[in-house]
Image (cartoon, rainbow, N blue to C red; front, side):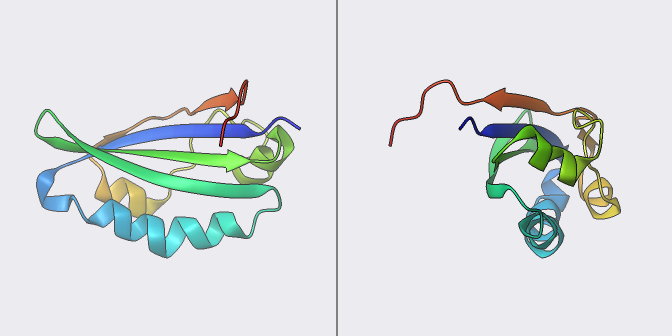
Length: 104
């Protein structure tokens, strides 16, 4: 079975740096955990040109599971108002990857 990884990024300012992680924990996680086929998610961060870049990598059982979360056009980002308020800019589209090789 091939799993799907979904990657999305956004930039925040230093003064709003904690807003997106809070939104992710309080809103995004509870919503995606309800979707059948959701496996896991990680919120990554790094300083980038005086900003904070956040990248979300989520793992799904299939593209059908991704569509259950994102809709019929899964390449479009799902951006909630809380994310818009926390971020200066963000990707409008996401990138999907199939696992080619997995080592654990």
